[in-house]
Image (tube, rainbow, N blue to C red):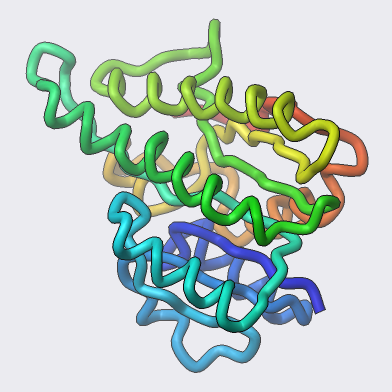
Length: 224
């Protein structure tokens, strides 16, 4: 059986992907600050972990070490979005967003890499807002710039590990119907549900590295 790790599993895309993976017979280590909704589901090990806290991440590392778990894939899906006009932001708001979207992503990846098979696949979730030349929206300066950082980090990691593995790719997604989208754009209805995108994401995790490495792929039917 394959074993994968999915961050931001408490709701939305992360939750749906965790459930679909488990149903297909994949062992899932589901990480979120609150994994209550994933308890007692076969093939899912829910861990209440804050990826911005070192002591919290140590719980994951200890589990991998003590159980001698090898990882086939990592989906860095956890995200933070704060919508404010740039003039109303400050360094603390930028820090809060970057701590989850960039620093936390980088740290959990660094800690998990020693446990990932050399043929393994790391998929980072970015946003169309982090793509140069894409349509931008007021109030998302911290969020979109952090997602731009995720895209470049993905390219850098693919370069560093190209001889040994694992593979690294990034999906810059458009509008998917989630709580985060609703908070950012109240009333907007996306063409893609979290469940539908989860199906695509899981397939890409399992098969995408056969065709791509170090790529930032735009996956979007629409943006608000």
